[in-house]
Image 1 (cartoon, helix red, strand yellow):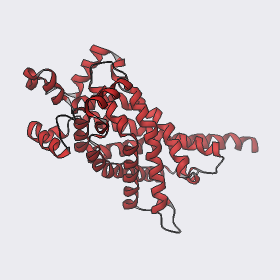
Image 2 (cartoon, rainbow, N blue to C red):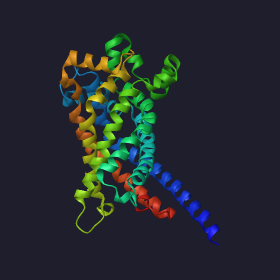
Image 3 (cartoon, helix red, strand yellow):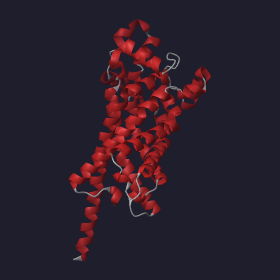
Length: 320
């Protein structure tokens, strides 16, 4: 009788791990979609200021010029690839995050994921970002090219500006595939990894630390409510961008460029042409965007995750 119970118990645990991973994947997708819907306009301003700092004195000028030249839809350029990018990235990121949390839990010999401290959660986020970078880089490249397309065309071929500016994500994808092959979609992969891994260390670390600080005495951090979860998510997002913004500027420059210059060379060119401050161009709209966007991401993630665990009857990984 006991010999039959051991395989059954192992099967149940394996089943629960698969269900938990699927829930993390789905909840991450919901979080990614919420993040884009809230933050896309200011993300467009950020990319424009990063890639063409000489055209825009500040974010207000960039916003006005975008509305004047491209109307409201210009602020939502790249929304489709941004949705694809964020849903793909966050589904993989949060799924990998759960797996990495479990790995850190086993390494530290703790009873449950809920007992991990902010540093340990930050470490799990650091390693999870390696997996999400693979899914993020191609879609992020398409998004950045679409967001900065008017400026690129004005700079290189002003005569045919009106004809080319209508290109969409699918046609652009075909063009890259035809001219550069699969490797063309991974332009800027190095800077993406350099941005994502340390960035998500601070992202998850900042979020988890904020949750603890916002938890009233006698309650668990999982029960702090929607508003506090949103604030903690916003703080995590701000920590992310403050830590990695220069790497994001370099990534954006590489991805819209047609040259094969290295990350180091691009960095030198930016500093030589525009000074060190160019590495922080667009930080203002990014911080304005990331607080509500990251707050929406974590609210969507946590509540979707809670709902799916409740419906499936599978215990949350944080309690296992």
